[in-house]
Image 1 (cartoon, rainbow, N blue to C red):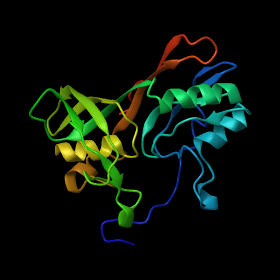
Image 2 (cartoon, rainbow, N blue to C red):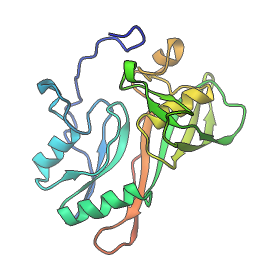
Image 3 (cartoon, rainbow, N blue to C red):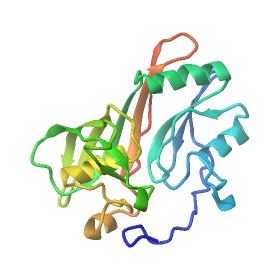
Image 4 (cartoon, one colour):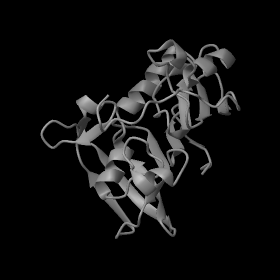
Length: 223
């Protein structure tokens, strides 16, 4: 294992609640994913428990459309039929969805809001970590706004324009304020300040596949 890789990890996803449903109809299943649960199964047999598996156990037709990092909690949408799956997939691909996240970051940014436009690429020797690379990276854009300043941390709302892997985590690190509890990118006091990654997918807005009407789904921040 690389010296900069996180220490060995044991997958122990939360068992209760088994599946938290925010909304369900013939086209959509919207759920609130807990921190610590994979979105899709991992390669190892012991990583088979995941949001997709649980959703299919309860709602047999549910199919994954997008993912959240295992350590991130919050709103996820699944499709209930092939047509809805295509419709939703195109919305994510063409950036027709709107997402907001809440994060607790270490320290205090100088400004009240800002924009981070830094291209990202996989840090291959230390995967799944990502890193900023102006030469090889793919475009990644995040807007942020301070919600609350605390003694050692700041609560921010994040507005990702793109959806790169670990985008919000690496962009906050690049800002100089890693998300607390981040086992990949935080160190020392910033890592130990929270028992989980303090990143939550707060809202997801999209066009309903049935009629194209814009709908908004929300989940209150649990930390």
